[in-house]
Amino acid sequence: MNRAVCKNCVVTWCCAVTVVALLAVMLTGCNENKYRVVERIDRYVDKHGRQVSDKWYEGLAYDHEEVVFVLTHHGQRIHATCDLSTVDKMDANASCGLRPLHSYECALGRDDVLRAPMPLSDLTCRDADGRKVYLYVAKED
Image 1 (cartoon, one colour):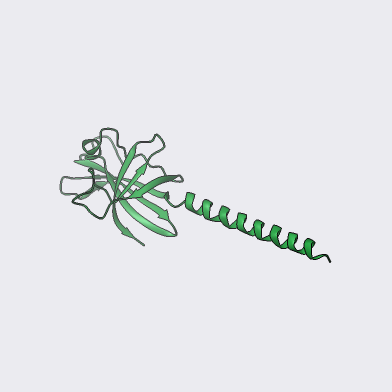
Image 2: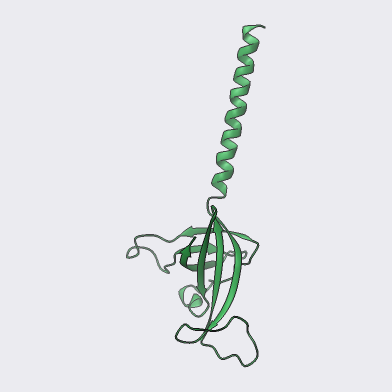
């Protein structure tokens, strides 16, 4: 076999491997900030934070509503809460509107709490309408 043909084969093979590797890195980077909601529970709590019910019904007496989420990210489960009683006070356009079976862009809260811009949260996501969702993480497993 001609050496020039072999060199062309090697160059073509190296280019193909490089392109595949770059695509893999780009696709992985695109999902870096994606969090998938696997569970959502609306909790109605009293003013002491004790759960009154997880279902709304006529005559239900409660102080405020919390939305508890379980999200997955890189194989980890993240348990977080969004408090409907404070979300509009932090940001007039904020919501707790994440839905199960959907993935959302999220950003981790900053470590330097004293210099971080308000409002503070452990995880800030954007819902389907582009509104911010401020989540407070209880645990990761």
